[in-house]
Image 1 (cartoon, rainbow, N blue to C red):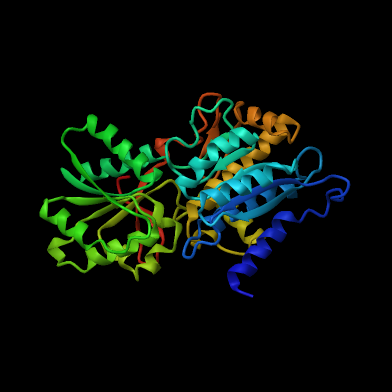
Image 2 (image 1 turned 135 degrees about the vertical axis):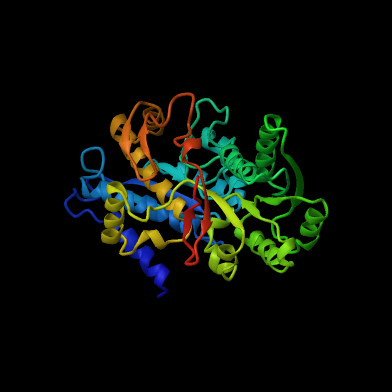
Length: 394
């Protein structure tokens, strides 16, 4: 059996084990689903999200579960990063009255397609990664989507702020021809309205593209000071290979959105990400000297998962999903029910929770379904060992 598969089986056993609770046939479990891109080669976001959910579930079950002794249970569905499959998964899960919520994966185009389905089925959609602005605050009434993650506007602002701190005045933006890319471009245009000292030229590419030499040559010819990159690991690794192959004086700095961090990107790029002038946005990293909350989570993960979660790829997915699951558990308790409409209303009510990513005070309201804020966003770079570490001054 593969090591990763063994780890996931141990994780699920830990999440589901609660021998002191009443038998399952007396009190059926409350199910939390993760429907994400498990089948995508080189991506670890789905697995990281599941580990965050499962660790929180194991902790809640250890304390007695929810609603007077019902244990939480994690179920998974593979959407392969395809909107149609994700929609099928959500419709199927919505038919099970014991499923209280569905966690989506990393891809904004998938999450955006799920928004109206969430309203139609009245299934809670919890977003621990996908960043397109319109996912959570989406205009749906009632709104069943709640996000604990970065959004494109905050990411672009942090990226462009970093460029200006480095006195860059002209950038070439490489954007995917998807909802993610269009959301990022809209954020760029909003930023530029208030920062006339910066110019950004947009260049589009398609998912699956592998040839980027022409874009890099054009960027140099137009005297760009750097590359503003919105990409996943599959395309970003080719872009880094092109830039690394240029003469040292011709290599442009790269300021990246976080899509490629869903994979083991420094290893995939054979260490280039750690050697080059390459930075990305993040919302969470374990401190070199973990604080009390981080240390408690590390100890819990070692006990329940049997691993040091500081070393897992796509770490933000774990951290976001862990906090979001605990907030869901608190909402179930407040609602005194698994009725999704009641839990949705409870999520909008005031709550205080000291989480892994931040301390939450009223994370969601009737008018705001974003649990994080711009304050959580920082610039990071890859260390030699592949860990993402904050850049000094951010």
